[in-house]
Image 1 (tube, one colour):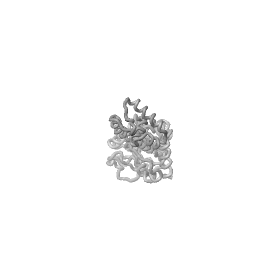
Image 2 (image 1 turned 90 degrees about the horizontal axis):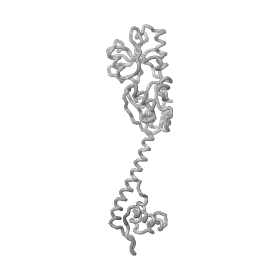
Image 3 (image 1 turned 60 degrees about the horizontal axis):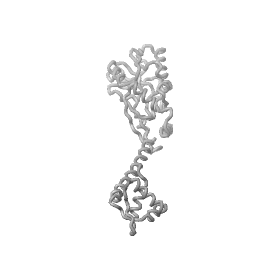
Image 4 (image 1 turned 120 degrees about the vertical axis):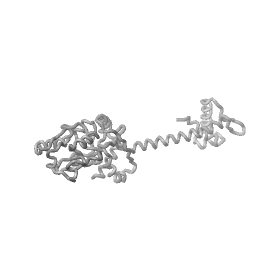
Length: 296
Protein backbone atom coordinates (compact mmCIF):
# COMPACT_ATOMS: atom_id res chain seq x y z
CA UNK A 1 0.00 0.00 0.00
CA UNK A 2 3.04 2.23 0.43
CA UNK A 3 6.77 2.05 -0.32
CA UNK A 4 8.23 -0.14 2.47
CA UNK A 5 11.51 1.79 2.19
CA UNK A 6 9.70 4.66 3.94
CA UNK A 7 9.94 2.71 7.19
CA UNK A 8 13.68 2.35 6.74
CA UNK A 9 13.86 6.08 5.99
CA UNK A 10 12.01 6.91 9.24
CA UNK A 11 14.29 4.60 11.21
CA UNK A 12 17.44 6.19 9.76
CA UNK A 13 16.12 9.70 10.39
CA UNK A 14 15.27 8.89 14.01
CA UNK A 15 18.59 7.11 14.64
CA UNK A 16 20.72 9.67 12.75
CA UNK A 17 22.91 6.84 11.53
CA UNK A 18 22.89 4.04 8.98
CA UNK A 19 24.60 1.72 11.46
CA UNK A 20 22.10 2.31 14.30
CA UNK A 21 19.17 1.93 11.89
CA UNK A 22 20.70 -1.32 10.62
CA UNK A 23 20.90 -2.69 14.18
CA UNK A 24 17.24 -1.84 14.83
CA UNK A 25 16.21 -3.40 11.52
CA UNK A 26 18.38 -6.49 12.02
CA UNK A 27 19.98 -6.04 8.60
CA UNK A 28 23.41 -4.87 7.46
CA UNK A 29 24.36 -1.16 7.11
CA UNK A 30 25.00 -1.84 3.43
CA UNK A 31 21.39 -3.01 2.98
CA UNK A 32 20.08 0.11 4.74
CA UNK A 33 22.19 2.41 2.54
CA UNK A 34 20.98 0.58 -0.57
CA UNK A 35 17.34 1.06 0.45
CA UNK A 36 17.82 4.78 1.03
CA UNK A 37 19.63 5.21 -2.27
CA UNK A 38 16.83 3.39 -4.10
CA UNK A 39 14.19 5.50 -2.32
CA UNK A 40 15.92 8.72 -3.34
CA UNK A 41 16.22 7.44 -6.92
CA UNK A 42 12.51 6.43 -7.00
CA UNK A 43 11.35 9.78 -5.61
CA UNK A 44 13.84 11.89 -7.56
CA UNK A 45 14.88 13.86 -4.44
CA UNK A 46 17.76 13.87 -2.00
CA UNK A 47 16.51 13.23 1.54
CA UNK A 48 19.80 13.03 3.48
CA UNK A 49 22.92 15.16 3.57
CA UNK A 50 25.92 12.90 4.12
CA UNK A 51 28.72 14.73 5.94
CA UNK A 52 31.71 13.76 8.01
CA UNK A 53 29.65 14.66 11.08
CA UNK A 54 26.92 12.18 10.09
CA UNK A 55 23.48 12.38 8.47
CA UNK A 56 21.13 15.35 8.31
CA UNK A 57 17.72 15.64 6.66
CA UNK A 58 17.45 17.96 3.70
CA UNK A 59 14.45 20.29 3.42
CA UNK A 60 12.85 17.70 1.15
CA UNK A 61 13.73 15.04 3.71
CA UNK A 62 12.11 17.04 6.54
CA UNK A 63 8.93 17.41 4.51
CA UNK A 64 8.93 13.73 3.57
CA UNK A 65 9.61 12.70 7.16
CA UNK A 66 6.41 14.37 8.39
CA UNK A 67 4.29 12.94 5.60
CA UNK A 68 5.87 9.48 5.79
CA UNK A 69 4.98 9.16 9.47
CA UNK A 70 1.38 10.01 8.64
CA UNK A 71 1.31 7.68 5.62
CA UNK A 72 2.72 4.73 7.57
CA UNK A 73 0.38 5.30 10.49
CA UNK A 74 -2.64 5.69 8.23
CA UNK A 75 -1.78 2.56 6.24
CA UNK A 76 -1.35 0.50 9.39
CA UNK A 77 -4.68 1.78 10.70
CA UNK A 78 -6.38 1.05 7.37
CA UNK A 79 -5.12 -2.54 7.43
CA UNK A 80 -6.39 -2.90 11.00
CA UNK A 81 -9.77 -1.50 9.98
CA UNK A 82 -9.91 -3.84 7.00
CA UNK A 83 -9.09 -6.86 9.17
CA UNK A 84 -11.70 -5.79 11.72
CA UNK A 85 -14.26 -5.34 8.95
CA UNK A 86 -13.45 -8.77 7.59
CA UNK A 87 -13.78 -10.27 11.06
CA UNK A 88 -17.07 -8.46 11.63
CA UNK A 89 -18.47 -9.62 8.29
CA UNK A 90 -17.36 -13.17 9.06
CA UNK A 91 -19.20 -13.17 12.36
CA UNK A 92 -22.40 -11.45 11.24
CA UNK A 93 -25.57 -13.40 10.47
CA UNK A 94 -27.75 -11.30 8.14
CA UNK A 95 -31.39 -12.05 8.82
CA UNK A 96 -34.00 -11.14 6.23
CA UNK A 97 -37.22 -9.82 7.75
CA UNK A 98 -40.66 -9.01 6.37
CA UNK A 99 -44.17 -9.07 7.90
CA UNK A 100 -44.51 -12.73 6.88
CA UNK A 101 -40.95 -13.66 7.89
CA UNK A 102 -40.46 -11.99 11.29
CA UNK A 103 -37.22 -12.56 13.21
CA UNK A 104 -39.03 -12.86 16.55
CA UNK A 105 -38.15 -16.52 17.01
CA UNK A 106 -34.44 -15.68 16.79
CA UNK A 107 -34.88 -12.76 19.17
CA UNK A 108 -36.37 -15.19 21.70
CA UNK A 109 -33.54 -17.70 21.21
CA UNK A 110 -30.81 -15.06 21.06
CA UNK A 111 -29.69 -15.05 24.75
CA UNK A 112 -28.95 -18.77 24.65
CA UNK A 113 -27.38 -18.58 21.17
CA UNK A 114 -25.19 -15.69 22.32
CA UNK A 115 -24.03 -17.70 25.33
CA UNK A 116 -22.79 -20.47 22.99
CA UNK A 117 -21.21 -18.20 20.36
CA UNK A 118 -20.76 -14.66 21.76
CA UNK A 119 -18.73 -13.54 18.74
CA UNK A 120 -21.69 -13.89 16.36
CA UNK A 121 -23.84 -10.81 15.79
CA UNK A 122 -27.22 -10.32 14.12
CA UNK A 123 -27.95 -7.83 11.35
CA UNK A 124 -31.59 -7.42 10.33
CA UNK A 125 -32.18 -6.86 6.60
CA UNK A 126 -35.78 -5.77 5.89
CA UNK A 127 -37.33 -6.63 2.53
CA UNK A 128 -40.71 -6.34 0.86
CA UNK A 129 -42.47 -9.68 0.62
CA UNK A 130 -43.36 -9.89 -3.07
CA UNK A 131 -43.28 -12.99 -5.33
CA UNK A 132 -40.29 -11.54 -7.18
CA UNK A 133 -38.38 -10.81 -3.96
CA UNK A 134 -39.17 -14.23 -2.55
CA UNK A 135 -37.74 -15.94 -5.62
CA UNK A 136 -34.67 -13.72 -5.76
CA UNK A 137 -33.81 -13.71 -2.05
CA UNK A 138 -34.38 -17.40 -1.34
CA UNK A 139 -32.53 -18.52 -4.45
CA UNK A 140 -29.53 -16.36 -3.47
CA UNK A 141 -29.32 -16.84 0.28
CA UNK A 142 -25.77 -16.27 1.47
CA UNK A 143 -25.16 -13.25 -0.75
CA UNK A 144 -26.99 -10.32 0.87
CA UNK A 145 -29.11 -12.29 3.33
CA UNK A 146 -27.98 -15.42 5.19
CA UNK A 147 -31.18 -16.72 6.77
CA UNK A 148 -34.92 -16.08 6.68
CA UNK A 149 -37.34 -17.39 9.30
CA UNK A 150 -40.59 -18.85 8.04
CA UNK A 151 -42.76 -21.84 7.25
CA UNK A 152 -41.61 -24.33 4.64
CA UNK A 153 -41.67 -27.88 3.34
CA UNK A 154 -39.63 -29.93 0.90
CA UNK A 155 -41.66 -28.79 -2.10
CA UNK A 156 -41.11 -25.11 -1.39
CA UNK A 157 -37.41 -25.66 -0.68
CA UNK A 158 -36.96 -27.35 -4.05
CA UNK A 159 -38.85 -24.62 -5.88
CA UNK A 160 -36.95 -21.83 -4.06
CA UNK A 161 -33.57 -23.59 -4.38
CA UNK A 162 -32.68 -23.33 -0.70
CA UNK A 163 -32.51 -25.47 2.45
CA UNK A 164 -34.53 -25.40 5.65
CA UNK A 165 -33.55 -25.86 9.29
CA UNK A 166 -36.61 -26.90 11.30
CA UNK A 167 -37.01 -25.28 14.70
CA UNK A 168 -40.60 -26.28 15.46
CA UNK A 169 -43.84 -27.60 14.04
CA UNK A 170 -46.33 -24.75 14.11
CA UNK A 171 -50.09 -25.45 14.30
CA UNK A 172 -52.04 -24.22 11.29
CA UNK A 173 -54.34 -21.51 12.64
CA UNK A 174 -57.00 -19.20 11.27
CA UNK A 175 -56.79 -15.41 11.02
CA UNK A 176 -60.07 -13.50 11.25
CA UNK A 177 -61.05 -9.84 11.36
CA UNK A 178 -61.44 -8.50 14.90
CA UNK A 179 -65.03 -7.76 13.84
CA UNK A 180 -65.68 -11.34 12.71
CA UNK A 181 -68.22 -13.42 14.63
CA UNK A 182 -65.43 -15.82 15.67
CA UNK A 183 -63.03 -13.14 16.94
CA UNK A 184 -64.20 -13.56 20.55
CA UNK A 185 -63.01 -17.17 20.64
CA UNK A 186 -59.54 -18.16 21.85
CA UNK A 187 -59.71 -21.56 20.15
CA UNK A 188 -61.82 -22.75 17.24
CA UNK A 189 -63.55 -26.03 16.60
CA UNK A 190 -63.53 -27.20 12.99
CA UNK A 191 -67.32 -26.88 13.06
CA UNK A 192 -66.94 -23.16 13.80
CA UNK A 193 -65.69 -22.79 10.21
CA UNK A 194 -68.82 -24.29 8.67
CA UNK A 195 -70.45 -21.86 6.27
CA UNK A 196 -67.29 -19.73 6.10
CA UNK A 197 -64.84 -19.03 3.28
CA UNK A 198 -61.38 -20.35 4.19
CA UNK A 199 -58.48 -18.92 2.19
CA UNK A 200 -55.77 -21.50 1.47
CA UNK A 201 -52.62 -21.35 -0.64
CA UNK A 202 -53.13 -23.18 -3.95
CA UNK A 203 -52.56 -26.91 -4.20
CA UNK A 204 -48.91 -27.87 -4.64
CA UNK A 205 -47.51 -25.01 -2.54
CA UNK A 206 -47.14 -27.21 0.54
CA UNK A 207 -48.15 -30.81 1.13
CA UNK A 208 -48.96 -29.88 4.75
CA UNK A 209 -51.55 -27.39 3.52
CA UNK A 210 -52.72 -29.93 0.94
CA UNK A 211 -53.37 -32.42 3.77
CA UNK A 212 -55.57 -29.83 5.45
CA UNK A 213 -57.32 -29.15 2.16
CA UNK A 214 -57.99 -32.87 1.59
CA UNK A 215 -59.22 -33.30 5.17
CA UNK A 216 -61.69 -30.44 4.69
CA UNK A 217 -62.92 -31.75 1.33
CA UNK A 218 -63.36 -35.25 2.71
CA UNK A 219 -64.76 -34.55 6.18
CA UNK A 220 -65.91 -30.94 6.33
CA UNK A 221 -67.40 -29.99 2.99
CA UNK A 222 -69.45 -27.29 4.75
CA UNK A 223 -66.28 -25.16 4.61
CA UNK A 224 -65.79 -23.27 1.35
CA UNK A 225 -62.12 -23.21 0.25
CA UNK A 226 -60.83 -20.17 -1.66
CA UNK A 227 -57.41 -20.47 -3.33
CA UNK A 228 -54.83 -17.71 -3.49
CA UNK A 229 -51.29 -17.59 -4.85
CA UNK A 230 -48.99 -15.76 -2.43
CA UNK A 231 -48.81 -14.58 1.16
CA UNK A 232 -48.34 -10.82 1.24
CA UNK A 233 -49.89 -7.87 3.06
CA UNK A 234 -52.57 -7.70 0.37
CA UNK A 235 -53.85 -11.15 1.36
CA UNK A 236 -54.15 -10.05 4.99
CA UNK A 237 -55.98 -6.91 3.89
CA UNK A 238 -58.29 -9.05 1.79
CA UNK A 239 -59.02 -11.24 4.81
CA UNK A 240 -59.94 -8.21 6.92
CA UNK A 241 -61.97 -6.46 4.24
CA UNK A 242 -63.89 -9.49 2.95
CA UNK A 243 -64.51 -11.08 6.35
CA UNK A 244 -63.13 -14.33 4.95
CA UNK A 245 -60.93 -16.55 7.10
CA UNK A 246 -57.22 -16.95 6.29
CA UNK A 247 -55.02 -19.91 7.10
CA UNK A 248 -52.13 -18.55 9.18
CA UNK A 249 -49.54 -19.42 11.83
CA UNK A 250 -48.97 -17.90 15.24
CA UNK A 251 -45.84 -16.06 14.09
CA UNK A 252 -48.07 -13.84 11.92
CA UNK A 253 -50.11 -12.53 14.85
CA UNK A 254 -48.74 -9.00 14.37
CA UNK A 255 -48.85 -8.78 10.58
CA UNK A 256 -52.20 -6.94 10.54
CA UNK A 257 -53.53 -4.96 13.53
CA UNK A 258 -57.16 -5.69 12.64
CA UNK A 259 -56.75 -9.46 12.43
CA UNK A 260 -56.68 -12.06 15.18
CA UNK A 261 -54.86 -15.37 14.73
CA UNK A 262 -56.74 -18.18 16.49
CA UNK A 263 -55.63 -21.83 16.90
CA UNK A 264 -57.97 -24.57 15.69
CA UNK A 265 -58.66 -27.90 17.36
CA UNK A 266 -57.17 -30.09 14.62
CA UNK A 267 -53.85 -31.89 14.17
CA UNK A 268 -52.52 -29.98 11.17
CA UNK A 269 -49.06 -28.41 11.56
CA UNK A 270 -46.29 -27.11 9.31
CA UNK A 271 -42.49 -26.89 9.79
CA UNK A 272 -41.22 -23.50 10.92
CA UNK A 273 -37.56 -22.57 10.99
CA UNK A 274 -34.68 -20.99 9.13
CA UNK A 275 -34.24 -20.95 5.38
CA UNK A 276 -30.60 -20.83 4.28
CA UNK A 277 -28.35 -21.53 1.34
CA UNK A 278 -27.82 -25.11 0.20
CA UNK A 279 -24.10 -24.36 0.62
CA UNK A 280 -24.02 -22.27 3.83
CA UNK A 281 -20.87 -20.47 4.92
CA UNK A 282 -18.81 -21.70 7.86
CA UNK A 283 -20.33 -19.00 10.07
CA UNK A 284 -23.89 -19.96 9.11
CA UNK A 285 -23.10 -23.63 9.83
CA UNK A 286 -21.66 -22.60 13.21
CA UNK A 287 -24.76 -20.53 13.91
CA UNK A 288 -27.15 -23.34 12.93
CA UNK A 289 -25.21 -25.73 15.14
CA UNK A 290 -25.71 -23.34 18.06
CA UNK A 291 -29.44 -23.09 17.29
CA UNK A 292 -29.65 -26.89 17.24
CA UNK A 293 -28.05 -27.10 20.69
CA UNK A 294 -30.40 -24.44 22.05
CA UNK A 295 -33.62 -26.05 20.82
CA UNK A 296 -32.57 -29.57 21.82
